Length: 289
Image (cartoon, rainbow, N blue to C red; front, side):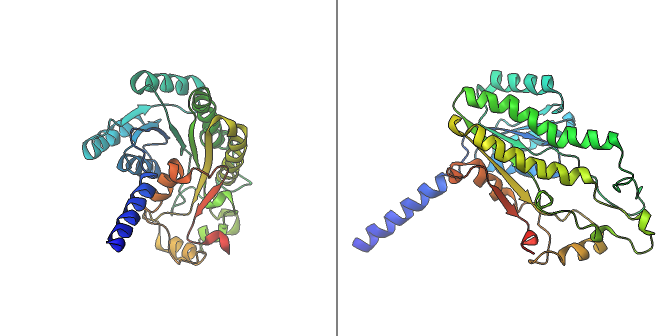
């Protein structure tokens, strides 16, 4: 009987641990919610019992994906057309959420421009020598200023109420520089070689800085702020590119689309209650080399 009681206690303790990963009825704003990772974040949130609110400049796709989540998980997910580079648009979006749900518990700053480098594209425009000021301003506006605005507007609301969680989606390229060798194409001259643009790397490094700043700034307001630094995801990239990239990764592969979902839930839930100002790196070991 003692052994049986001990086993029951262990099972009960396991359930208590698992309960910390639940997001039951938590309202979660996800910027860039209609994008590749944004959709995955929303699925993870809904599966954990939360209510994902998808903010995206592409309103129709955000609404369409939110409707699919509603049907699959039976949660009142919503898609909204929000321009995160416009403070008024962000404030209006927050007001609508508060009016409908009376709360916002979690913000996931996910939106960013991420130009894909493909064959036969305009190859030289992303090289540092040629990168235009307009491109710089546009990328910074979405990836960094947008995160600042959303954090300021929603974070201030959280600070004035019961607190909350901010999760910033950075990148392994927020820790290391892009290895431009993986983009090289043998038939092109040096000055024509494609490159990962400088703005992406600067933004992702900046997101980590914003994370640490906010984590300490709002530490007494019951707001935890962390960053997730994911590596590359399989997304129909050219084989030549993939073969070069995986040689830089100890696990010898890229990530599958849903492999960051559990990390998102960990950082958005009470399972990470003593974690703030941190960067969770999920890159198959790439930044260890």
